[in-house]
Amino acid sequence: MPALSQMSNTPFAMFLQFVEIALFCCGFITQFYFLVRMRRVSLLHFNLKVLLGSFSVAYVIVAVARLMNYVEDWIDPYSDSDSLTVPQARRCFIRRLFYDTAINVISIAMATFAFERLFATIYSHNYEKHRRRMAGMLLGLLVWLISFAGSLAMFTENLISYDFWNRRIPFNSCDILQTFPKALQAIAVIALLCYTLTALAFVTVHAHNRRVSKEICLAESTHSLSLRYQHAENISTTRFLSVIVGTFGVDLFCSCFTLFYVTLNKGSSSDSVVVDVLSVAYNIVDAAYSFLFPVMCILLHRPLRDQLKEDLRTIVCWKKWNGDGSSRPQIRSVSGKHLPFTYTNSRAYFDALHKMWN
Image 1 (cartoon, rainbow, N blue to C red):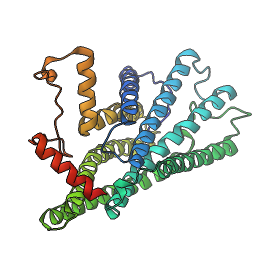
Image 2 (cartoon, rainbow, N blue to C red):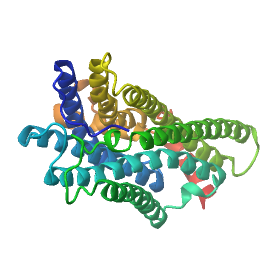
Image 3 (cartoon, helix red, strand yellow):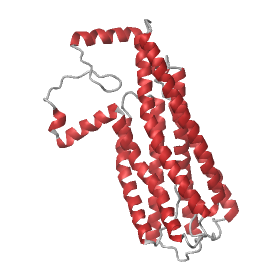
Image 4 (cartoon, rainbow, N blue to C red):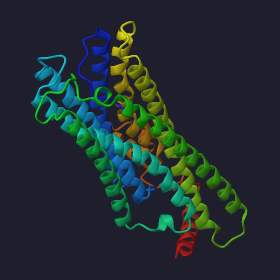
């Protein structure tokens, strides 16, 4: 949960700020490509696409809010280092309204990943067959409405406490580290607890899917073919999301450690340089994740990875991806391995699969 702090004068802190800006700018490219290609990618349920898309768009909003904060620091530097003028406070708190909404979306979407996979596991017989978009759209809308309601409540609390719409505020930033540091600490503790439960849910779902998949492979059932496919796809998706959740945990724990160190040592003169640097590094981790999240999704999800190779082949015509130039399609498993089927065998396989599904 990064902060909206003003530019620091420490040389190393300024270097970190430029690194953060570069990461956010690179993140715009990776997020845009991911959002465009994810719309038509296979092996992802529409509900999961909505959650991943909301997660990605939220990071774009975080990046825009951070960059707008830096732009204002450069174009209109604060005349008084101890307080914000009324116009500056208004702009700052409006930016924070959108920023807090995006942070809430990221947090809720991360927890919802586990519930989506849990639901897919419980209803494994029918979940992947239902392609109606209404439920996914309602799920995404609910995530954004809850997130906006939470940030609007904080915005209203700041307006009541500081009346920033009519008078100056006694801080050089609208950062929640300045306005409500104790509340931020409580939010960080809750976020850590929720993340721990989410991680445990992912581990449980993945272990359950692997066990059921082995049982299906050994069972002599007329429906074992379709069930095997359902659980193989569920395992592949859960493994793909587990890496996203695991790296997000690193981001969260680094942010929380920095948060507690900065808030507990804010008034310490002996550690002022360290606090100054960590206040900026607080945002570096999130900027890095904003860039790496779509990269990990593309590299870990086989259809997205294949699409990236196809796009690169179209752009630069790399020979190592052209192969022998044959356009003959190849059959792959859910994990992406090539299946050595002849035309006759593959036709029989998919005819049997089609009958099972119907």
